[in-house]
Length: 345
Image (cartoon, rainbow, N blue to C red; front, side, top):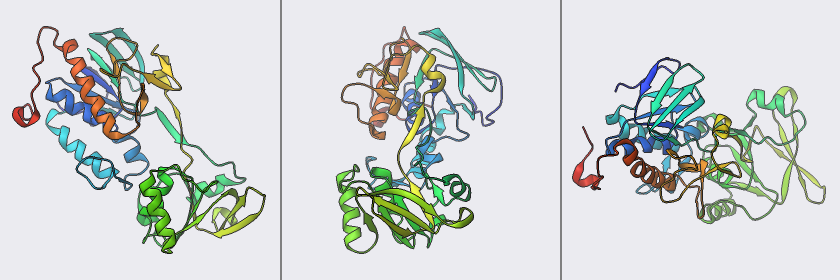
């Protein structure tokens, strides 16, 4: 089946599996399904594949992808696209699934662009749903957001070349970008309300070593207090400590990494069992409380779940194998390694 490149093209598509979400895990699900000779359609509210990796941080290095000491998010998405190219999965981009009807073996999905997808099973790979940044409550922040002086993600590091950058946050995004911007930004100051960071211990240690080497500065325990500069042109970020004392840090750009607020959107109305805003699944199959609907990646939850891309990849494989008897009820699945079977033609 030829890929559908036009986001707003309307029509009816018959397939085996509808994948809601075209991030890295959704893309890999196309591969796993294809290896079992099942067709898939990708549907995503964003206008391009890759999810957060493409929309928020295509140049951010990822360190926990097997066989890659480090790979930029955008390069990972490109590699996944190359991997699934032989399967020609249609893509309905820039549109949400507005309706879902039917049951195991016969679902109908309608998008807000007028497309209809008929599938025997559904995989929800929508990350944590639609996402937006958690904004710090600073007076007048809107003016600085409008000029790009306050940002919540980095698409291209070169845009920060030579600039004085303040990074606020204590998680992986803050620490990873502090390390990634060394040698690019003119100055880097990392602000966190406590001395201990929530990031991976190894990268947190690398940031501490970089601070000791004079490559960046760490301001703890401090939190954002105010922004200063006329007409949305940032000049200083004012920090406050726990005792109410303040200090000013010269800055051209504030990168605020306080996580994302997420919304499952229409998925929340599908009658699936939810736990704290995530879809509960059976670990062995990734099937939800609704037979024939599966969830993988960050949107799925179960005991022992780790929010890692590599675990999402594993879940894609488990879901594909669990879906095979739905698509081919009269055909036994004889598992073969990819090294012996190759990619189906």
